[in-house]
Length: 481
Image (cartoon, rainbow, N blue to C red; front, side, top):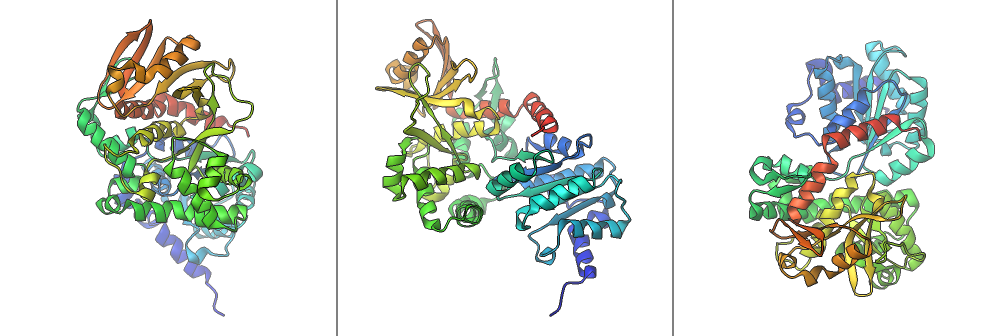
């Protein structure tokens, strides 16, 4: 039987690394807009004071490979020798069966690299290599001068194995779907649609047009490729469902956790996606999906590890947690997934309320403090978002999400918010609307009304601000787990 020769492997490496001959990355990558995460990711790549591999993980189609090529482009512009940069996609068939060390050895022999040279090696789609974490850790120990980067779309598998085997040798870097602020930046409409207000708030210059883009964001805007492709926008159900959701549900999670009944998992996810933002229980999920409650508990853990959902727990009117949490909310980490499964929405769609809440909550996926978010429900009252200080166990602020302007004139609609604020001595609260931005004083409590689209933009812009991203870079570089 014929085997692949080393000459063929080297030839393929030259094909995958065109800068070895041209000195440049393909123009399409350098022309593509950069994610807000690019700067801290690049800082992680060029950081050599800590001997660690960077593991770039996240859901499928959020731009990981593009960001890698943009980082290579920046390295070249920063005068790194092109022959000191190796990129290899491990899903390419010619590399099947090769260990990471063998690939590195071929690279070393081709250009005469020594063990102490400063080189950059990027393994794309590393989950295709069995026991990748063992091989990568060995390289980190063997070549402390090399900067090793791994990326992968099987986010649940990468995170699990990184924590199990890479402690002290890997730094995880999560790339989530686009924030609404990133989406607006990608379509180059920030100056046209957004104006900055005081105290970190942003408002709309043209609220109707901003709302149109917000609805586009709900339907397909979480994925960079979809933002620039009219074909994908028209067929988002086929693109997002088949290429993003199905591959996780039918391949990634079953292979990682040994799930035999993938249709059972699929039914559960469909039930969750349809009810994103609604309060649910294990009992109701079991009834609607036909899956046992014990199995549901395991599946929820798997789906959360895959960054498809986020579970949010309930507190009562005094912001106290429940000892036995029988009810909770489950949010999709990207509202576009619901549109892909059940069809796109319009501004008048019956699901707009919970999709708006999902979109606002999904901005927090980009923040390490997301576990401080809860919702409150008691008797006939509720509040959609409550930020709970884990030290004092007291709420710092709360938000009621609406896709309507009615609360601005009919305060009975926000009685739950007002009651919660009184009970917890909060003097400020936020209510999102459809089009209105204003502040009012209610019983000495300041209520800020802000359009939902503008509030989603405000969250994304502030969470991914220069200061926040600088703090992210510091945390990544100083992580000792």
